[in-house]
Image (cartoon, rainbow, N blue to C red):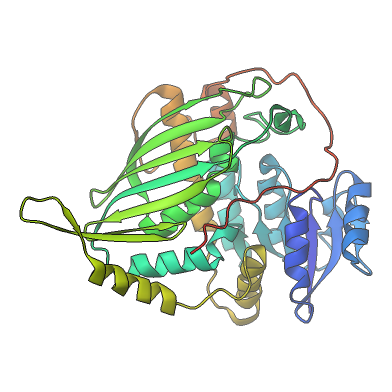
Length: 385
């Protein structure tokens, strides 16, 4: 029975707690940590975590032989917490984004390597049937080479969203919607396409004058094989429609699911290729459904890796790759320059201090609240098949 600790009792911690509770024969939550200890106790009571401790300071757990921790705290705290636990002998599942800088991400990777412990970064959208099937279809190559990819990470957040004390600053949140919302879709893009070689980006803050960071960004990408891409990240889109579209030479597929294939008439205009469409649809239909969805699926993957040595679907390198693309967007949008990857340790945007100094500060954060009342949060559309 693996002993689990939840570090941070904010809104996302409920998804982690529910995920672990799906595997009661394999793990037990023994502690919930939060700087507001009453929040930790409230989570324990809410989920009936018998015997779990409510703790104010996570360092109290470092000598308690915890097997696995979920880090659900603000981004700027991820690196020190994760490194401390790995050095103490625990495996770590850390919420997105992996860290607030590439320097911190590299510290986490080095701690994982030195300790021999697993480091997984939350990307719960991979653990859904639509995403797994989309990945399977793309891997089949039935669409031909990918020519263009479009990512629309559309969310909506009210002005007061950025009143929370750590949000809306380059120092503590590390960025805006690109880092903390589009991170899910950027992870999926990289999982399916691999990394780009260069990008050009713009960003703005159009509706949240209580935040230093962006509330919308757009990036144009070029991939190694010549494909182009576009990522739009936003918290100003009513309806929160989200999609990933992959245009292959022979066909198009997307999430939400749609498949279209074309052949050329004698004049070059399109004609439906129903045979290929049916082949792709049949492949998608035959791929298995995901049993444990979202955070539960990722927790299962981590538990399997701990118990059997099977590979992590989302490891620390994956988390760093996603962060590197996002840092590239911030660098390009702040400097007006095209960004060529990789981003090295000598780059001005490699450290959190460098980002704080060089990224565009749109507004001064003037309003701060310690806590919001507990309420449901949106985790993104299901991108159904």
